[in-house]
Length: 421
Image (cartoon, rainbow, N blue to C red; front, top):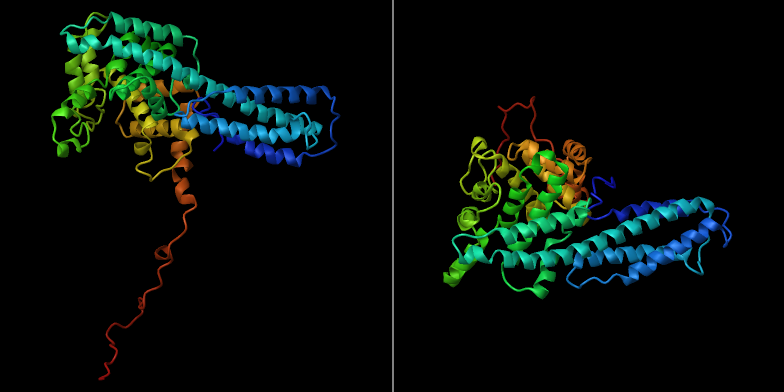
């Protein structure tokens, strides 16, 4: 369960690997090193730098998941203090130095990931404000000039060109980012814009790695930014409903893809604009006809719509823990969320729900080793989804059934005599 690809280091680095290292560290106790040993001195200096950097990290209170990671790093550093502090209480042998160095490497990776997520939150807030301003004409004019949206896409491309790690473009916790965004912006439409922004950035990351996606990357990114705009029309219609009608689950009939396509009909003036409405209206369709809103089948779905549907489905699984856990039937750690989403998408693809080529390209773009890991996990029935049942206590009803009171040699013609009371 500690395979670096399985835990997908780019979503949450597997610092829990250091648990085994502490056991090995205690087992390697031997002749202690001198205090002026060069390797020991360099390691203590590295510890002090990491400890200072960890104390300097400022995380907003709304980033609850990042705060948990930060606390976990602090716990590891407190353990290292026993060996690497200015006045250590435990001696260090030559055999223990590589283990301590490996533990500090885990801390460094975790701190780097936390900084990446903090930077992602800051840039996303900036993009979110620009996206809201760039889409104002969609509501007010029958023809929307796409120049503002195209400028935003080009800015995202230029800013993300140096990003090679998916952890730099995907939110660790989508709900935490929304809580941060609500501190500086108001409105019920924030989830729609935030989902669109994350979708567009993931499409851009895949397009930079997959040649087949590069030719129409701008079209797919535009569709990704605006694919959930139908929700805005549903939210506006809620004001006309009665109190009882407002309690009905939003989009119960799967209306938002069609409403979004109708709303975006006036967005013209960029390459491939004639396909925009088609992609938006089909981003929840599946190849086997089980999608919505029109339950289209294989031949009715275009190539762009298939790619868009795969990206939307993966992010939907990653950000919606309730669906990913099947209402609590499965369980997993936070580090395994991205892998669990990828595995669920992989299994749905095997059932014929998604385009196999598009899914393979998306997974390979996220991690080159991910497709092979998904295949192995599917064959072994992914232990993380069964963790809840590994510690399950057997009930009395699950005990062995006692043998019947009769068998094949029993003479059924004999009856037990009745006794009159």
